[in-house]
Length: 411
Image (tube, rainbow, N blue to C red; front, side):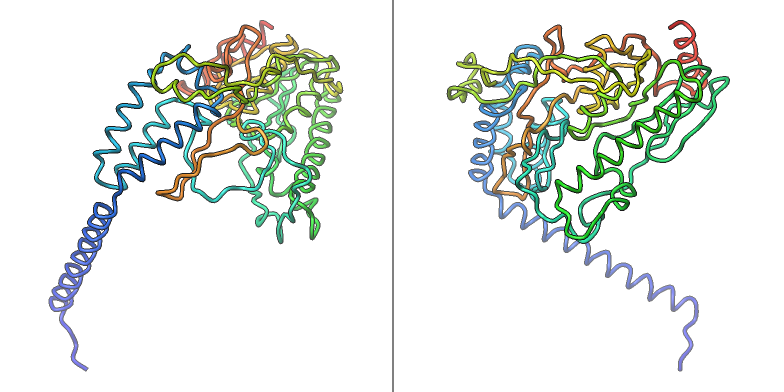
């Protein structure tokens, strides 16, 4: 067999590398050519027209956007229509539509791949599942969509003098003097894989599995609170910084934090009594986007696992169901909130939502069909302000720790 010199091997490798590069370039050019040749402006405009109609009738925050954030719907519509008509490419048209959706600055107004998840009762991401629609969860927890998220403390409590860590796991705890600290990083049952595996049974339904995981986690929370109390905690700091939301489970967690009966304005749900399509032409909305019953009050009875002074730590990553947690306890003057203004995600998708499915690309546009308002009339999508400002993510850990230490010393 002929042995190749290093120089010969190098020349051949260089030759093959050039061929591979040319092949990639050719494939890219073919893809670009197909993308341009297959572009159908009318199909994109038809999808966009359906999306506008659905938003006029079913986007809970549309009126707030025009009245409070001064979104100019006719100008936005003209720009989007012109851009789609002249995109000349499916990729560019998708970018245009994505820019239209993102332009509202609403975390729950978003585009997702078209495969729809089963209804799952997400309170920031959706509210109230249909209990009768309870298909088998799957072969195991992973197949049912459960994952293990990071539940650990993100805030540098360890830099505060006298910090004593207690529990780790799903709900870490610790003590700073007589202040017990409890971390709740997620309000979604599907973020706790190990908890799911502990209760999973073959043939269990999706909804039944969710309730089983929730019951297990409620028991863990009760045990964590009881241990903090036994260890000498006289006040409790619940850390929901970075908690992006979850399900209606949050109401059961709220109940643990007080023995009082709490009230707040019921979440407003979309159900307009008329055709609102002309809002895209700049006409005033001829009827509210919400159902008439949207002014009713909701109540929540506390179960009193914790009855002492309560503090909540929140930041710009606290959103959706976690904002509901903050609002219930702050608005009823049960808790003092430390940190910074929350994410402003607000309410999400009642009964799994009703997204607009695009026909040109396999994408759904999800829009919140409910909104939550605070006692001063502000929509939660503006975020919830803390009672005590504390720097959270943009400063050094020592400064964050000192700010919280000072706040605790003066409460």
